Every structure is written in C-alpha cells, then in structure tokens.
Length: 449
Image: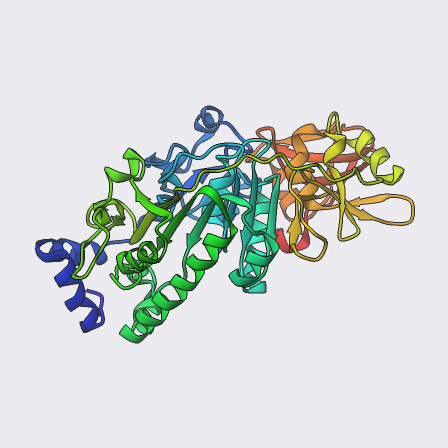
C-alpha cells in the first residue's frame, strides 16, 4: 500500500464518500499505459494493419489505444513519429470539445506535448497550433516531440502567459489551459508528487491557475472556448477556480463536454458557497471509474458574438533562389506561398498566421540552414515533408538496415543521388544524402539508438 499524506486521505474521503475504498484500492494497482496514433503521419486503418503495441481501444479517443509493449521508445515506429505515448486520462481534455479544423489553437502550458500533438491531429491544413512552455529545457522537449511527429503549421513559444497576451491578443478560437497543479492525480505513478504534496502547495497552485485563466481570456477571440484541465482532485484547484472565474466573467458560460468523455467521468462537485448552478458540467476522471490516472476538466465558452474579420495576408517575402532550387529538386510538390523566412532561416509555414521574428522558439517547419551556395536540410524538413520527397528509401521495421540507420551508420541503396527521406511503412524516419549508391546518414546524433 502506498503511504499517502493523511490530510490528503481525509480530504478525499470527504469528496468521494462511499467510493473512497475503491479509489484507494485503484491507487495501489499498476498505472495504465497508453498511446495515440499520429494521424498526421498515418491513417488509423493503415496503422491497425501493422499494430503490435495495443491491448484495446480507448473508448473516448478515436486514435487512442491501451499500451501492451515494452521499450516502445526504441521501436522504429516511435522514431518515425507514428505514435505518441500518453497516459489515457491525460487524453480526455482534448476530447471534451468538437474542434473545427480551421481553428487557431493555443496550448498555454504545453510541455512535454501530449495535448498539443493530440490537438494538432484534429486540425486541417488551415489550422494553426501554438504551443507554449515557460521553462526553456521543457520547451526544447516540446519542440522535439512536435518535430518527431512531423507536424506542420505549429509554433512553439517560451514565455510567461502574461507575455502571450501582448504577443497574441484576441487571436485564438480555443485555448487549452493544462494548468500546473499539486499533482494528486499522479500519486499512483509518481512518488515525488506524494512527497511534495501539502495543503499550502494546493492553495498556491490555485492562485497561479486563476492568474493563467485570466491571461487565457485575453488571447481568446470572442465566441471562443477555453478548456481548463488539471491532474489533481482538490476542490481549490478545480471547481473553486472555475466558480471564481465565472463569478468575475459573466461573458463566459460552463458548457457540457462531449458524450464520450462524459460517460467515463464523474460529475463536478458542488461545494458550499458555489454560485455556478451547473458546476456538475465539470468532469472528474478517477482511476477507480476509468482506466487511467486523475484528471479534472471544464469547458468555458465566451458567449460574445464573434466577428469573422478578414485579415490581409502579409506581402510575400523575397525568397532566395538557392532555397527554391533546393525545394524544386527535392520535393514533388509544395506551396510556394508557405516558404517564408523566420529569424533569417527558411521555414515552411502558413502565411495566414503572423509570427514576428524573435517571438517563437520554433516557427513552422525549419527547411534548413542556408550556407554559401546550398541548403543543409533540418531534421524537421524530413519528418514533416517526407511524403513529398522525390527520393525515398523504404526500410523494413525489423531489418538490419533500419537498425544501422538508427545507430547513425551509412546504408547501401539503389536510390538516385541527392537528398532522400528514409521511410518505414511509408512514413518518414529521417534524412540521408545519397552519393554513388551509399546513403550518408543525417539522423540527428542526439536521437540515435
């Protein structure tokens, strides 16, 4: 049995009443593992033909599966970004709302990237995702996960949420606020969360969460949606934060989540002094009710009418012929208007969303570095635009060649000379420079096995 803080146990007994024993028993079971299929890389029906990882589907996530596989991070499918390992309860917030594929979405507290990559899979070619993380080291991890999955039209930023309000005022159709919390929902899998728990920390987190929500309002368009989520059970960080927010923001309403999520979660809890009549629209994910850890979620809708203003596109940038010649020789097709210069580097990104130089950690897909008279392509370029490459080297997932490639070695090939993408099951794994029947390895050193 886990040794839990006595005060936490007393509080949970009060919240759960007759369900407390079942909750406690669940906390002493093994954590549930899961993953999502990256549908930006591979269609679900195609993945299911090659699936060796799953033990069943997650009922509220169309592309989510329970995981039954050891050391999945070493598998070529993981390296190729076909899958993202994520705890099943953590997938629920992104499933609360029907998302329009053309939306501009901000994930305010995004690292390591689970909810961000899940949201991006729901966006189409015209949708844009901005993922923010205040801690630089975690922002680097976030950017790396977006890169591995080969996602386009994404931006990562590294700033306080108060600065986001100045950079992106009234910009987003939806804001995900996966707020930093006391972590009670992670007690089953994280001993550190247990050791660091205190009532003072709960109260401190609640204040910070309210501040982040206030900043979410300022970056949201009229008519937009905020999805508020935590991985904790405390009333102070959940229903009380929502009630306090609604009391000071009459332009917002608490709305119901999608049926699939509602079926596998418990109602929000009405507390003494609560002014929100429909506080039960909030959802609580408990480990004794559904497979997964703890999670709280609520969907807030700005009731103000939304004006769909047409913004003028910025004037096309002048692109050096070195860049266009490289793209013409490497790709079978691409949108010329998506080729831009950001922070003096060529990137592939929609011209319909303005990002000023210096504000983003990463903007769009980095094509590469312009050197004296050629382009040195970036790993992002191979991962995101690999399906459009003229030269492809397909490797079997259990072949010696793919092991050599992931170790950073050269491989023999019949591919024509030039920049090529290395693929597994048709999905980009990385890049290579083919010279005279030899593919010189360009898989990043930090990612090699």
